[in-house]
Every structure is written in structure tokens, then in C-alpha cells.
Length: 349
Image (tube, rainbow, N blue to C red; front, side, top):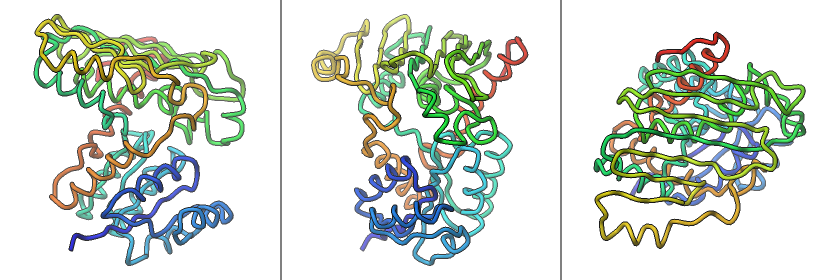
């Protein structure tokens, strides 16, 4: 009989709920506990999802039936919770960003390597059907020479979003703004499809919010290691917010994605399946996912696929597809954007 993995979640907020829903749908997983330092939040979460609740991290980690910990806390606490999981011999999945400091990410990866446990990140967009098809086309060389990539996140968050979170919009706990919190999924997709980034020149500003320390608007020009150019533009200052866009172009093809749908799919070497892809997947989505409401369109399906791959990695004793090293890449890009914006200089990675 296949092993059933006991999961525990740290963080009883909105994303913790998505983790719980994702775990519920896995046949080889069971949610056994929630940990949150707010007693009422932990207890309410436990009742809602049918698991034990705990406010003390040591007691939570000491459970014999706990195999995998998922971290859904404020971003600035990710590494310390993941390192604690390694100390107790637990595998760990960390919500994006895997942390806000490269030094802390490296310590997290090292802690799990020494403990013999797995650590991985969450980039659920990679598990969407459009992402898989685009990546397959890249790997097949259908774009020819890659020439340009665009990651565009034109979103809106009102001031209350930052005010009620407490930690949101702070360097210490959020690690950044429109890039580190909202844009990181789109940035991860861009580097996953286009390849490593070599150089960055960027600007960041606060244009539409008060009482935040971090950027609500950012623009960066990129040079990739393969010679292609690109642009990242992310914001939480564009009312009312609309489709997150990723475009990948080469001298033999172009693909453009709006949220979870294609709005362009065209290659010089037309194949029979291309028309089927256009017929089934090319359209503008009826509503944008998270453009103005953080909860809008959030479904657990792609998180579930992300978690399923992690469990498969444990079973097969391999690295998760989104390993700690893989999840680090987008954070490195974002921190380079911040350095460029602060210094006015082009930054080399």
C-alpha cells in the first residue's frame, strides 16, 4: 500500500487555505495540523479543514505523523520556518517567494541538504496547460532563435490591502512590492521560458499608495544569456487591474498568454495540432485572476499539481521540479531589479 504523507501548514491565512484545499485533493496526502501564532486563527482553520491546530512551532514540528510542512506565512518568515522543518527532519514546500533574501534561501537549501530532506517552492502557474504547451514549444525549438520576452502584471491593490495586512508593503516582511509579492509568478514564467537573465536596468516607484515602503510600479529592461532582450513591467497602481501577460517571441514563432489562456499562438512551422490549440485555448479570459482582488480566481488545482510533483520527488529520491535552487532564480532577478533602481546602474547577474 502506498504511503500516505502527513501534511502540516504554517500560516492560517488565505494562502494557507489554498494549501489545505490542494492537500485535500491528493490521494496520498492527509492534512494533520495547522500552526499559527494567533490562537483563534489556528483553531478556526483546524475546524474548517478537519485537522489539529497548534500555536507553538516546536509542538507542531514534533508530531510523528507530520512528514511534509508547507509554509504560508509572511514572506520574511519563510526561511526560518523552512530551516526549522529541516531541523525536525521534515520535508518542506515554501510559498512564493521562497524567501526575500538570497543568503537566507541558501541557508535553507543547505539545511535541508544536510538533513536529507526535500525543500521546494511554489510556482503554480507552471502547471497550467498554457504554460506546459509554451514550455514544450520552447524545448522543441519551435521559436527558432529567441528574440524577445515580456512579463506584464498590470494589477491594482487599494490602500486597504496594505493597511490590513500589517506586514504587506514593508521591506522587512514583504521584501518588496509589486515585483516580489505580485509579479514574481510572471517573472518566474519569463525566466523559465526565455532562460537565464544576464543584465538588468530598472526603475521602481511608489505612485498610487501611501503608508508603504516598497514599489507599487516597476519597469525593467533585460538581456538574457542567449542574447534575447526583454521587459518586465509590474504594478499594483493600475486601476482596475487587468490580465497578466507573458509573451515569448523568436524569429520563427510567437506565443502570448493572458492569465491562463493564449491570445496568440503562431509558428512558421505550422503543425496539425496548432489549429487544435488555437481552437481550444486561444481566447481572452472572462475575468482576470487576481488583478484587483487577491482572492479572485484562486483555485487549488495547480497548487495540487505542484504538491504532487513534490511527493513524487520524495518517492523517486530526486529534486522537486521547483526545487529550492529553481525557486531562488526569480528572487535573484527581483533583487537585481531593486539594486538597479536604487543605483541607476545596469546590474549583471
